[in-house]
Image 1 (tube, rainbow, N blue to C red):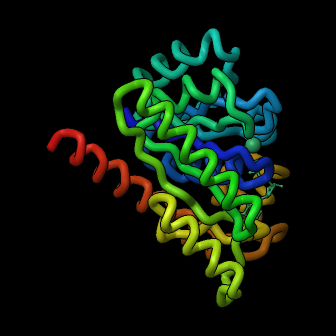
Image 2: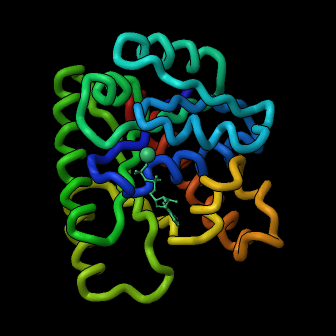
Image 3: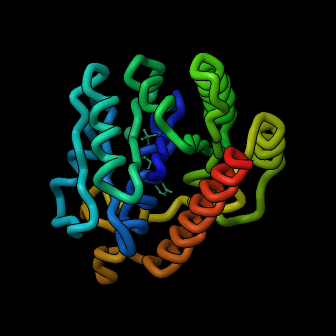
Length: 225
Ligand SMILES: Nc1ncnc2c1ncn2[C@@H]1O[C@H](COP(=O)(O)OP(=O)(O)O)[C@@H](O)[C@H]1O
Ligand SMILES: [Mg+2]
């Protein structure tokens, strides 16, 4: 069953948040297991804030010695496995990447983010070579403004489009997304009295999820062709 990891060496790029958005939306319709493979345990902390649906489980990884078993077990138990990784390259990160059907690389529209995304693409490529398997990747623009792009932002988009596959959907900078770290749960559990723009965030999340599903489907076909 598909395993999707979130990776980039830039801290604060949006890995954990985007992983939560993907997993909670997928869990509306099917079984999902999330694996917290970041020693900072931000995902585990989020999972304790609110009651999660029965379709969503969060596993806190025991580290590089156990990650492979944790992934294999999650793949047996759930329809989707979503892995939140730490920002630095490590054996833990490379084991998880090796087991992934898709690695999503979140990036803001700043040079540091773009540099980190490019570095991360190179690491994934190396991992793929070592495992003799091309590991599909998708760059996700996250924390972006919904406004017209500036010259610098356009430049960053061009640079990353040259470096790899860029998702059409962006996860914009929205209070509803950052609120998940306070409220726990998914977007649909947020209280409209506390958080503005939940509807727009849900629509944004749905577009994100359906593009991820399309990419997975496409790469599955490419592999069996
Ligand atoms: N799409 C978004 N909209 C609003 N805030 C976001 C978004 N993505 C991330 N953030 C915020 O940015 C910060 C860093 O995000 P996080 O997902 O923890 O990054 P990472 O896991 O890559 O370190 C968090 O405070 C989070 O709430
Ligand atoms: Mg994180």
